[in-house]
Image 1 (cartoon, rainbow over the protein chains, first blue to last red):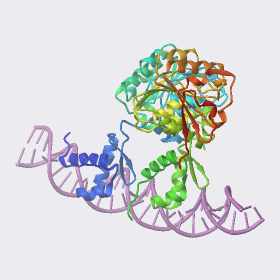
Image 2 (image 1 turned 180 degrees about the horizontal axis):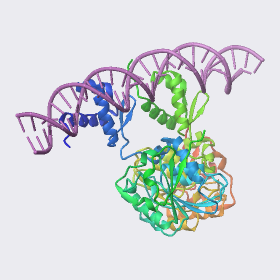
Image 3 (image 1 turned 45 degrees about the horizontal axis):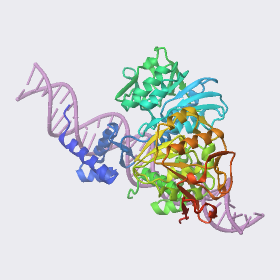
Image 4 (image 1 turned 135 degrees about the vertical axis):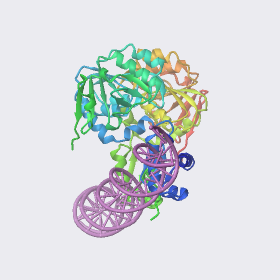
Length: 256
Length: 256
DNA sequence: CGCATTTATGCCGATTTATGCACGATTTGG
DNA sequence: CCAAATCGTGCATAAATCGGCATAAATGCG
């Protein structure tokens, strides 16, 4: 497909403008290029879809370089993650050993655990460890190593060495994307490698994802979807593609 | 009507303001951004719902991540710890490898580090690791192991094995008590053992304590006071007893 | 070349969003 | 216990967004 020259020029200039000014307004851009605001909005929509900027009311903002940090992601769509978290928690039984992978949804799950539940929790993510320490009945095992700032967890060789000595009953896996064909995917190579190991060591695998992850895929494959034991999704999500795969699917319903 | 600041930018600025000032007032923000107080209140309400701050009458306060027993201690006499923290930070130079021991004062020190400082940080404390991850220039090494809920950090044999492989330039040690005779002491046996190892591995040792710790002692000895390289205390503390021991003493003065 | 198809764009109407204002309820400080 | 400050809610408005449709130019193909 050939892209129109003017369009490409516009988007390139918008990209520069975003970097230098830190923000762009649809009105200004429309005036500057002599096109309608609708056109600009379409540009911004495309660029946002391509991961080049973040749309906001009135214009767009540059995307935090290299994706957003874990603590930032935690606060995004917190309500929906809480819904998922409660559903996921209901599948956890006393006495289990559970591995918590690095993921903003998993932070919510850790926080949503009942205070007195007795279990052994393993994690490579400081933020999750801090949340788990709150609960009086949980024995927390921390996996150390060099921390990857993107992922927000220890995922290098040292961490893998420690992970290899553990055999959790359940791996609560974070996913950057989940797709019938591509399976579960991650943004970073090393992260994918660690996740693969965590899954390999665990008896069961649970994945909880918000609707926007479904049907998308990130660059690095983790595991095929069938390897999941349980899939937790929001109510109203189209999950027809995942039926009849032998996966237990839990639909989390928002509660008032 | 002229589209002024975009909502998102406002909230981002408010977030920064919360981190640096420790609190924000709705009236001030309204004036500063040129919007009504209602709008600010709505912003704060959203941010509180997203877990980014805690609403209080007249404005909002920053929310400590989690709220563990350790973070509870963090919020106690937060102002004085911040004073100590700034003084302690001034002794840290670029390129160093620094170990952060488990301690509420050390959480404050980690948070007070300049955003772009380039150094390698080692810690066995998830809460501190989470704080360090926010700083762009820091390489964070996490020490894993079974977490002691009292202490809020990994201090067992596995953690000690990892600690033994590191040789930090500086150990920022937390103290439950400091006394001329008893030296530095801790409440827990295992904690004292780990602290001893951390000190042994490090070239220099820095201790920052609030006034209430001085002259008191806890059950388990860590190190004699002379082993400290630097001691950071609040202004107005009686530190006569520690003079002439060859220790560098820094008196932290409150700043406006 | 002629014609179907795609693509970029503009325009219109319906909907959503951000914001301000008014009013009654609630909290705070003395 | 009162006055002042602050809060929450409902309503109004203007701006921004989205989706569909039309147009015109560019493109592809026989």
